[in-house]
Image (cartoon, rainbow, N blue to C red; front, side, top):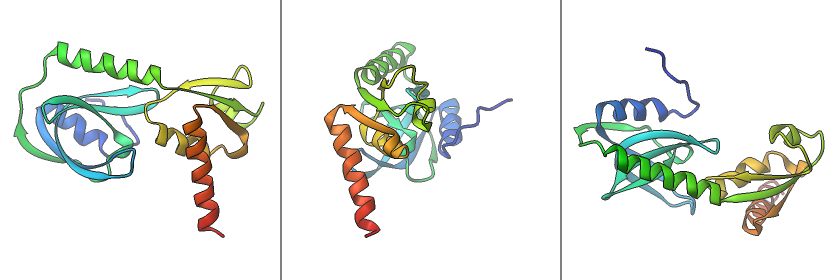
Amino acid sequence: SPRLIAKHESFGPLADAISASTTVIFEYRKSDGSTSVREVDPLKLRLIEGEWVLLARDRGGIKNFLLRRILSKVKDTEVGFSPATEEEVAEAENDLVQYASSNTAVIEVEPDSEAWWHFGAESEQVTISFMDEALLAEDLMEFGADLKVLSPGTLADRIRAGFEAVASAHA
């Protein structure tokens, strides 16, 4: 059967484990940089605000895991689990969508720059929703001087710190 091709190595094994209702193990990096090995029951993959997200039962509740933060190969334990109800998954999805839509950044883009075209800007100010501020900062750094973060200040601080780290590493 046809398969969706995603840029994340973990996508295929997670999709297979979801279909089989089997528990998986992977190493995960949180936004603060700490890592841990997670053993979860994968329920659904969703693309939200440009980020692939795994909804999974973890320690009794349904949690979200960004595929970009999975560091290791996904290991299928081949241990089965009882799938969540449609209502549980729908509620978790709704919470996730609300979370993403509540996280917005306002950026100013240089007209006719790569950033301008990337964000489909119709004016110099663009409002974007995001799942993870640290990952958004990494993405926005690629545009360099083509954009300026107007809000939130914490995002601007992350980008500034990222550029300072790069400059320091190459000084």
